[in-house]
Image 1 (spheres, chains in turn yellow, green):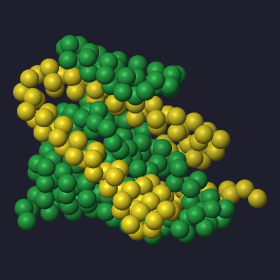
Image 2 (cartoon, chains in turn yellow, purple):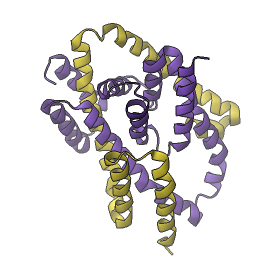
Image 3 (cartoon, rainbow over the protein chains, first blue to last red):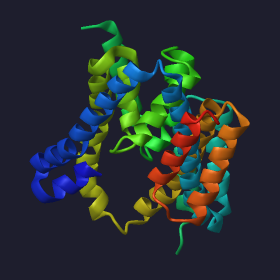
Image 4 (tube, chains in turn red, purple):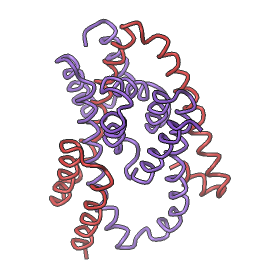
Length: 117
Length: 174
């Protein structure tokens, strides 16, 4: 996203600047936090706190997915594609490359075939 | 160069090209490679790193730098991040113009409509894989469930959920 916005304003330089601004500080912060975490991970309460955080963060991702899934209901075939992706990746742990190689062309073909007008 | 760093770079360069739908969509693949294939870490480690990446400010893709950090320290974190964002950034730069120009073209609409459900399926999978890795007690499942319900019904800032969950965890409830 930052690549595209940056490009709109200043071409390559804009893209690089936007990415650096958006990524560099968070990268430094998260690696500093990780180093700090490693120092304190021997205290079980630190690991326990992060166990709580990971349970809640998993819930946030699921909530995001459910919100995104709502508009799919207008097109039943999209629900089908979504279910196939879930079963393949989450339940059968198929390598992502294979799943995308099969499912993306198929799904785009259905979308093309059912295009309005 | 350290062979582990080369391996990290190779893994994430590949993943970078598969990352349609953003970082949240490729978590199952990162987990598959880091835990099941490469044996770089356990499920519990993965869940902890994910929690750390969510608690820190910044984009979701930061999980990648923490995987690299766990495997090969700070250098690993930086290499993983560069490998992950490099190719997809170049691709985004190259495609952005054409994508804008064909905004109303029927083929572009078909591509978007076709990819949307795949992406949603992948993000759902992320939630599932993370829940399986993270939740080791009924209390953890309860926290996940309550978070889903409240996140759907309210517009509270996500950090509130994480804070409360951290306190419950530190108090030994999870």
